[in-house]
Image (cartoon, rainbow, N blue to C red):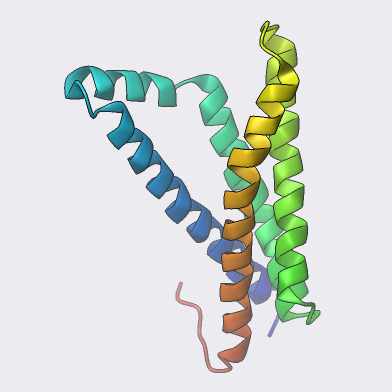
Length: 154
């Protein structure tokens, strides 16, 4: 397998997994927001999701996942490294990037809320799903290595 193909498989698989999980989480948040008053819930949900900081978080998540997914695909399919170690490594890196983003937002916004409490909430809410996303992605990448006659569609 060529390096370019391994990188394409890694990037696609990790972004697909992240997109699947983000859509499920967003659907859950939409249901929670609209359970009382549907019309106002939709408006509040849309205004919350169109916030520049939320959009920046999604851009950061998808871009880092794509580029690190390409690297993970190369490490797993070409270099033959253990997929569990790769998944844990990249999930911790992505958690650190998200924590840095949240930390910068709190420093810029000058909120009175305790920053440590917010960081602990982010760690609890982000690190476990990111670990699951990365472990599922690298497992799917590893499955691609066993498909010898797999031809990636265009």
